[in-house]
Image (cartoon, rainbow, N blue to C red; front, side, top):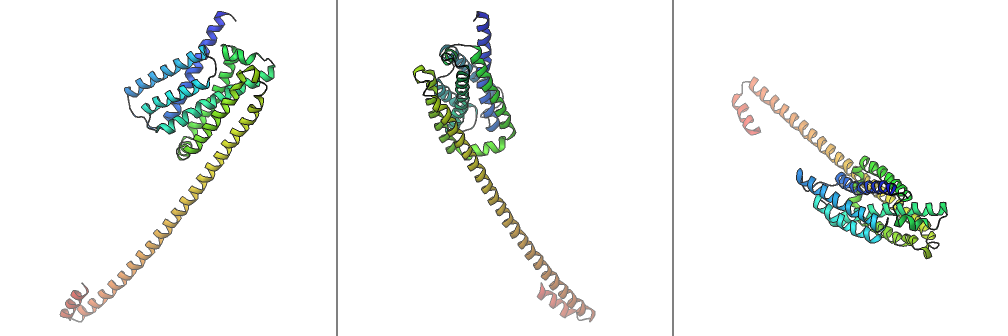
Amino acid sequence: MEELDVIWLQGIQGVLCIFEICALFYIFSLFFDRRFNGKRHGVILVTAIFVLSSITIYQRYIAGMYSRYYLLMISLLFSLLLMALYKNSFKNTLIITLLYFENIYFCDLFILFLMNNIWGDSRLVTYVQQNVSWERIIILMVTRAITIGILFLLYKYQGDIKRAVIENQNYLGLYTVIEFIALCFCDKIFYPFLRDKVKIFFISFPMLIISFFVLTVIYILCYEKKKMLQLMSERIDNAKNSYQNLILEYRDRDLIYHDLKKHLSLLTSLLEAGDTEKALLYAKTVG
C-alpha cells in the first residue's frame, strides 16, 4: 500500500475515533445535568475529548484495532471524566460507558468474523488487527453508522430511556458483565490456533446477549406497564374520593341553605306581626 494511501486511511481512522469519543459525551449530555455551566464546562469537555481521542488514535495505530485491556482502561478513564462533567453516580457512569464500548467493539469483531468467513482468507483477521487498511476502515465505518442510528433513537426516546436506565441499573450491570465475558471469548479470533474453535462463540454469544437484552426489555416494559396501571388506579381512587367529598360539601351547603331560609322566614313572620322583641331574641339565639 502506498504511503499516501496509508496517510489517508490514518486520517479517516482518526476522524472515526474522535466520533466514537464525542458520541458518548453526546449521550451523557442528553440524559444528565451538567456540573458546571459556561466556559468551565466547555474547557473541560474539549480537553477530555482531545485526551481521550489521542489515546484512542494512538492505541489503534500502535497496538491494533481491538484490545480488551484498552477497553477497560478507556472506560474507567472516561467514567472519571464524565463524573467531573455530569451529575451522576460512578456506578451508573461506569455501566453506561462499558456498555457503550462493549457494544461497539463487539460489532467490530462480529463484522470482522463475517468478513473473514465470506472472503475465506485466514490472514485477514491478523492483517486488519495489526494494520490500518481499507478493511479496517470499512468495519469502523459500519459500526459508527450503526451508532448514529442508535443516537437518533436515544434522542427521540430520551425520556423513557433515561427512566429505564436509572430504574434498572442492576440489570444493565449484569448485561455488561455478560457481554464482557462474551468479548473475552470472541477476541480469541486473533489467535490463529483458536480461530476454528471461536466460531461457536460468535454464534452462541450473540444469541445469548440478544436473548438477555430482549428479556430485559420485555421485563422493563411489563414493569413500566404495571407501574402505569397502578398509577392510573391511584388517580382513579383519588378522583372518586374528591367526587365524594364534593357531594358531601354540596349536601352540607343545601342543609345550611335550607336552615337559613327557615330562620329568615320565621324572622320575617315575627317582624310582620310587630313582635320586635321576639324577633331580636330569636336572631340572638340563632346567631
